[in-house]
Length: 64
Ligand code: SF4
Image (cartoon, rainbow, N blue to C red):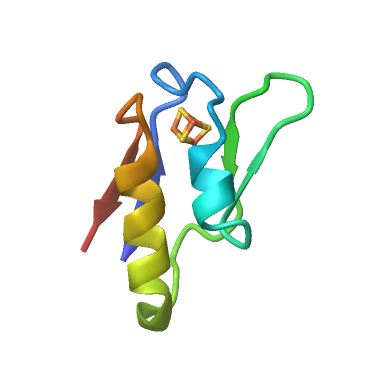
C-alpha cells in the first residue's frame, strides 16, 4: 500500500500525526504534513487508514 499526500489541500490540522505519529509529522517550516513511511507494512493498515480518515481536508489517500 502507498500513502499519498496532496500538499495543496493539507492545512496542517495534524490529525494524521495524532492518529499515526510513526507515519506522519508536521513540517516545522510549512506547517504541513510529512509522510514518514510512504509504503507502510500491511500490519499498519488499520492505523494508516484511521489517519487518512481523520484528515478534515481530505488531503490523504491510500492506494492499494
Ligand atoms: S490531517 Fe490532513 S490536513 Fe491535517 S496535517 Fe494531516 S494531511 Fe494535513
